[in-house]
Amino acid sequence: MTKHPVCNYEGSDYQVSFWDQGNRAYEDLTESIALKRLMPKGGRLLLELGAGAGRNTSRYVGFDRIVLLDYSITQLKQAQERLGKSGHFLFVAADIYRLPFQDGVFDAATMIRTLHHMADAPAALRQVRNVLQPNAAFILEYANKRHIKAILRYWLGKQEWNPFTPEPVEFVDLNFDFHPKTVASWLREAGFKTDKTLTVSHFRHALLKRYIPTALLVSLDAAAQWTGDLWQLTPSVFTRNRAVGGTGIAEHADTIFKCPGCGSASLSDKDTCLQCASCSKKWGLVEGIYDFREPV
Image 1: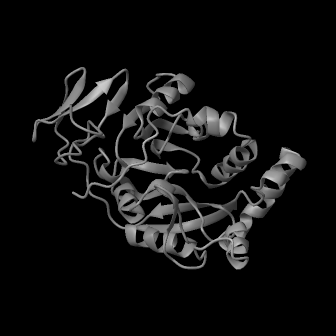
Image 2: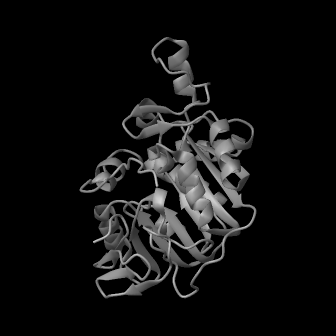
């Protein structure tokens, strides 16, 4: 299997520095509105991909259980501190390119502010589709290269890359902006049908956020989000997608996990790890966090 580069937030204070102290109340609130509009009313098992410190997790109401997945143990520990260690939440450290779950075990999934770290976004989307049941909801947010600021900068000669071309642009290492039509084609190829598109963060500009009250900006953005099905000219785009076609049947009904090394679902619980009966690899379990990144 191809080894893809991973954007690792291990040791990062991202939640505090970027969100809590980063003057991003406007972005957080507008994303909350978009999620409320797009999320299903509930379900059995939700997979939150790129969960980070759990900023959005409490917004996913009505699910029996939520699996928070992130590559960073640091972020997952912060999520535990925020959410607690109740059985309602399951914390998993893993690579999105090698999801440690059986086929078709989730009836919903979200990926917010995560796809832009994927050097091979189509591969990541295929992985997501594999673990979803037919008709499962998949809420995806992606960074849009064809937004107003990028277009103006390009026309004024202040930006070399073209916001209208289909290829992703990597503006910082493992930080990509995507063209909406390209993402739409990737979703179709991965086995999704897009039901709804919302454009978010219409007024993401330092001067606007400084001089216009946050509540007003959020209200204006909420009204403008519905234009997403017509055009996408904002830096952030949210889509509600539905898994179409068939899905593989889980090998073992008593567990959601599979070995990311060999794909077997025959994993035995050894208190501090899960051991695969097929390839003998052991996957860590420390302080309530399953670690499927590398075998122990």
